[in-house]
Image (cartoon, rainbow, N blue to C red; front, top):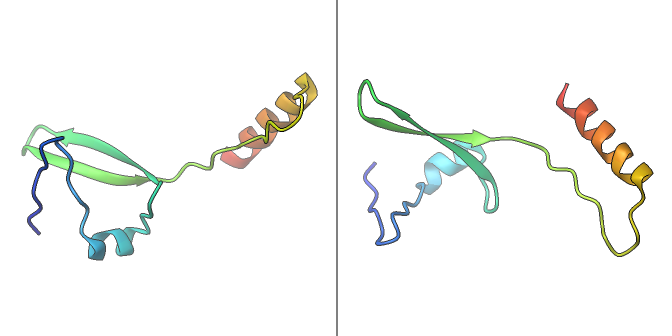
Length: 75
């Protein structure tokens, strides 16, 4: 499929490809260059982000717990 590069050097991933890869608005993708054949490779970057609501004071215990949960989720 052909896509146009905008003046900000952005491209749109066609909907057919986004749907097959499960890429949604706000997702991150990994972009690499395969220099051997001049190909730009775009892969979904599936990383679970841990967030803490900051409508309260955050204790060191809250931070430690969030870090531990994130480390456990990645293993």
